[in-house]
Length: 397
Ligand SMILES: *Cc1c(COP(=O)(O)O)cnc(C)c1O
Image (tube, rainbow, N blue to C red; front, top):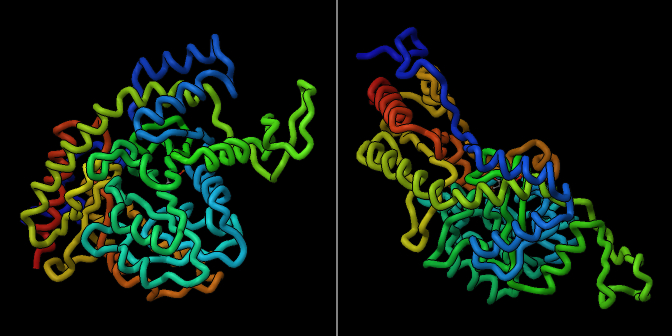
């Protein structure tokens, strides 16, 4: 049997690849340079243009550009009115920011388990967690796959809950033909370089509700308004503005907006290539009983941000750590998404204990994320598949 590189064998590839990487072309650079040379650097026309573009892409009525995805979640949680004494149900498998935004508002995140096949929040788990204190849900389109909107929205309607969709992974995804960003009360996006499109750092919230939109715009700039109808003491003085509530400076710059507008122009191409790569991986790994492929619900037309490789411990003599190390030895640098949020020691200190979400905990022990990004070449994809097959052959029971 072929020796794994970690044990002194020859690696499948001689240069490393990471699990994610941005793609920046000349048009992106030119857009940024043009803004630097001729434009306003902040609060300028690029922000409005970006917000219109985000409405086009998502089908939402309103979009608010902010400085990162975490700021988007924070403002959405504030606009939702979450506060002391409130409970907000959050997916257990997500980046910590999805739950941190609830804590920022003084409310309590309550973690819902995942569906063991799709890895998204399980609507049945949500139902079981509802109490008289439940005010909302932060549901993540994990890996880019849409949450089960029909089921989740029905729960929200029945119990009068606000739905915040954390779509940091999911720009470009559709659910039953409707784009992510047009369905929840508020949808939050991230434009960090590892995500499908990037602004360097950046985020946005989309909504169809004008009241929420106005509030988000105000909170983005210190809670200060220039709209007379929002003021306690309106005057006709042209300089006058009023802080009517406590907000933040969560603005995006026009420089970043210019980059993101240019990137959004490439979203169809990014999306198509990601789908192609996912199809190749699914085909290669779907036939191997040692591996588990993420299940897609038929309603989701997914632009995948992450490709999750799940090992089947019944069929392999190695654990996830050994698989991860072996891949690293083959020069494929994977990652793990994510630790169940409540396993972080900060959450442990808040009183959350292991055992809350068994599907999420089992999931975490068995997964890693393979390289998935626009500029992966066919050779790269083939080498990833070859490395995975080599490791499976080595550790097969
Ligand atoms: C990236 C990410 C965020 C945070 O976005 P930033 O732009 O890094 O602040 C939030 N939620 C999820 C699921 C993410 O992947």
